[in-house]
Length: 181
Image (cartoon, rainbow, N blue to C red; front, side, top):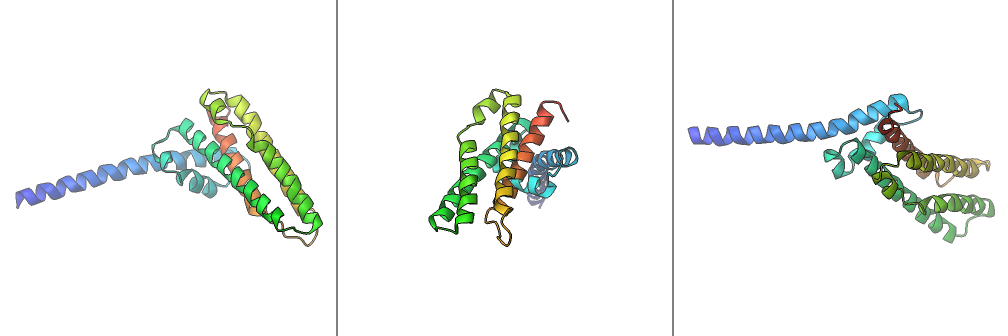
């Protein structure tokens, strides 16, 4: 009987330790997103937590690690958006939509060429910040171009919002790392 109680107690202690470690890891995502949501205009807290928390590495990351995760998410989203635009263009849309998609493709395609990870790992945060800021501006250009035609439902709205939010996350983490927040 004592042996069974000891094993049960050991299992309970192990479970509580694992739960505490997972909870602590989630805290950095929550805490970072909360700080950024108060300091970065237009950053959506729920999007931030969902995005950064979706990566298994985030549960073991520090702030620099979260920044790296954010950049990887931005790059993946940008690549996916470029592929989506190419798919839409293959469908031979109306001329005004094709024109908007073409502009967005040019804008996003030029951004994808730059691999920011080596700059980030070298702690060249100001360089990375400048580049990510240009991504945010480009997203706005693409979104404005898409929505300028009356009666048209822009096909990239959700993707543009996601790119905007991911750039806001990147800029927020960089601001913290640079001591500007």
